[in-house]
Length: 85
Image: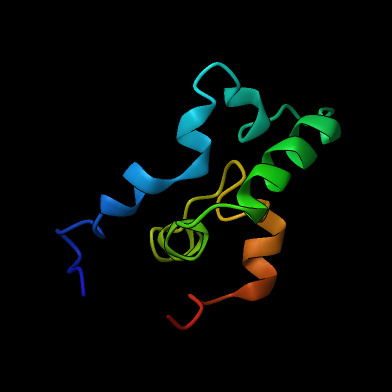
């Protein structure tokens, strides 16, 4: 388990489906009015083998922007805690 000074392991990023879309950052970090972009990003997350690790990372690190593990910031706040492995 990471300490306050030690970030969570990022090895899952190598297997993340979003890595195949480097030219589409707006899908995961959409502007306020870009609901369609957020939906596209979330659809990519649905098939991602790293989805759980990504979501847990965002929750653990308290990331407040973007789509992580298929969830928006409000979706992560509702979940409230990392999901079991």
